[in-house]
Image (cartoon, rainbow, N blue to C red; front, top):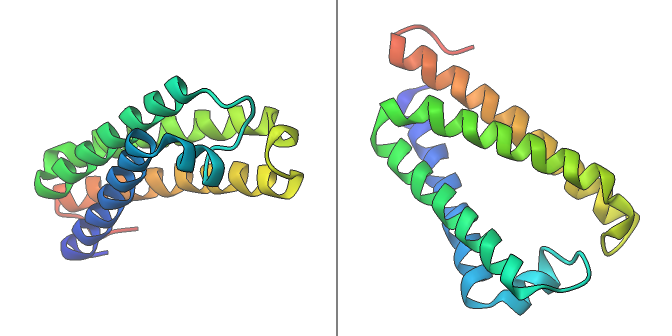
Length: 132
C-alpha cells in the first residue's frame, strides 16, 4: 500500500468517526434509533459515545497528517474495536434483531483486524519497508 493510499484511508476513517460522533452529540435520538439501539435508551451514554467517536475521528485526522501518530492511533483503535466486539458478543440478543447483533459484532471485529493491518502498513511505510 502506498503512503497516499494509507493517508486517504485515514482521512476517510476520520470523516466517518467525526460524522458519527457529531450525530450522537447533535441528534442523540437519531443515533440511538439508527445505530446504537440497545435498550433502554440513555441519552447521556449516547453523548459519551459521541464524544469518544469524535475524539477518535480527530486522532485519525491528525494521524493522516502526522505519520508518527499512525501506529499509536491505529493500535488504540484496534483495542477499542476489539473490546467493543467482545462487548457486543455478549449482547447479541439485545440488538434490534439477532441478525443485527451478529452483524454488529462481526463488523466491529473486522474493524479491529483492519486497524491492526493498517498499523502494520503504517509501521512499514515509516521504516521505508514494503507493505504486507
